[in-house]
Figure 1 (cartoon, rainbow, N blue to C red):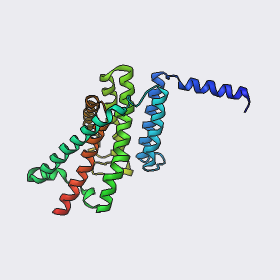
Figure 2: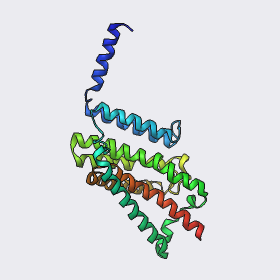
Figure 3: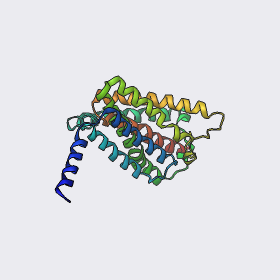
Figure 4: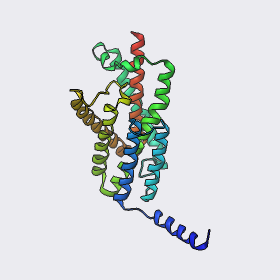
Length: 249
């Protein structure tokens, strides 16, 4: 490579190292999340859990390009211990609520899940320890409460970060409800079904509200670990409770 080529390459790297325009960075973040959602829903070729790791790598590149740091995504070294305490406390609270709900007869039916009822112990373990934490929690929390929330908050403030992150988190779940690839889900349906529109609206509202809660946990704890703990507990312990009840009865 000639000296002139090295010089051109060096100038390009210097340009990339400068904080990019907020609109450009956010457009790249949305593109990564959108393509990942399409792949996970079956509209694009999927590599399974690899989708999450590729997305996280690309999103991390967007943060770097924006001039962001680990603190922007809620993973600053000084916040990990506090975040871990929050996460463990939240897991304990969710576990206690699920236990009480499973023991009380009139709330027990709320935990029924026909799909989980038919899985084996090994599949449940894989679901709780691999699919949920890596394919769902890590991807969604890093993407929405880490990168998206962190960058928008940096550019426009906490309220804007919460609103943008939560609304897009709600919309993120639409394809998972409607696409045939996920019809095994208890909430999946066809777009032509009479109940499809109310189901989509309800899901978007529910997950948007959950997004607001997750953002508030991120803000109060100053760590991404707090919403990650609640997100994992809600999903994984829900599967465990449904599995246990189906085999007890």
